[in-house]
Image 1: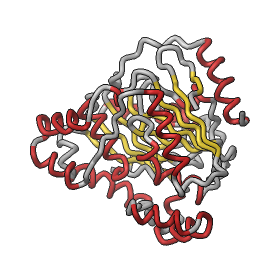
Image 2: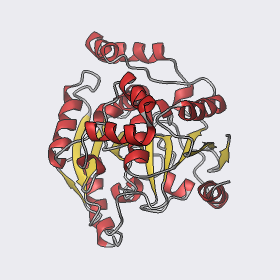
Image 3: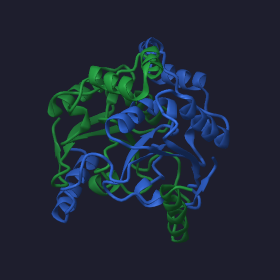
Length: 170
Length: 170
């Protein structure tokens, strides 16, 4: 067993020993979803004030709304959420490369078969060159989608990994 | 401003006031990633023992490895992680419907144009009928992918929303 796996088992014992929230319902109590980045420096519950049971939290590389669309539709249409809080962040890895760089790294590290798998899936890594514009573009994408009705409230934010602050963009 | 948005602003003030971790590096310090569900009843940091800066956290509807592949490749190839902890959970919404049900709900709620958008994107909601098998299938998918080299350690787990426990499946 790896040290990481041992940590999961030990945390399970301590967390469950004092766990008192086994009664929470499946649909988010406050009917909203937070979409943010997978970045290790973000703790959405603490930084954005999410109590257990209150909101769906979707996380992927770059907080991409395009990538998250499947989860967003499930959240809204099957589980009743009607507000989206989209949060990208300073220092994001997605600002540092282009698709061709990522394809090149995959080829160098994993070989031609891996690149063939990327190509077969037509995989777009969805990097972006400018942070505020990426927030605006993703909010615009959601507002334009027929899968997100006008009744859904959408806001776009930037979390500052240097200060712990979250500021509104749109 | 909505109550949700006001909560984000107020939390930003209090969280940043005592924030002391602005120095953390972009690559996860413990070189692993956690893939889990967007479900509102899961707090990965507390339930799985993740300290700020230690791990990427990817979340989507159902903790789908297929859906998360873009983020996983970025995490490993660009940011140096080499271990995946995949956690699905009891009471998951993805156990409760099939693709045709979701398409039907979208058509009823949002109309034909929305269904056309789903169809154009060939969107698979990736539901699953059996929890343990879904964990096994997703781990097998990652192990079979050329984009995830054999050097990456992969484990599959189930979090129990009723008890706060996390138990290993594979």
